[in-house]
Length: 185
Image (tube, rainbow, N blue to C red; front, side, top):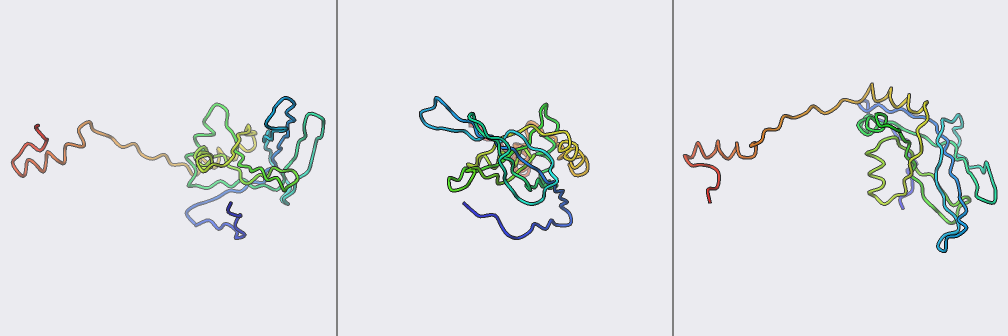
């Protein structure tokens, strides 16, 4: 596991970023009839926060589980991830993706590592073996993301592909050499 960098992120001039403070609620569910695990942890809610200090507090405790709020997390939007944001906000149910880890020596044993609203970035986290859960994106975060996408997303221009594009270069070279160009076996 690579520890997070202590250096602050400084975007390049051509790569604007936006940063928002977010709180994430993670629930612990007690599993009564499971021979392999006694509990399950799952992020269930993400909301805009006014708390910029990192902190964790138990907000509900019962015999069926508990809920913990992680404050002071940041969601950073980068222009280079605009396509992933676009794919998310134009979907039927936009999501905020929470990358988290289970670490037994912590209280609670769950640690929220990073947040993203990019489909592409969440996919890369999953490909790297990380635990990622999707929670519903609330309206305020969606509005911010849509405004960022409108300002920064530029779709790649479509390339016109031609059916025999692979053979054209060979045909032109063959014409200069006086042969057919394609293998006539």
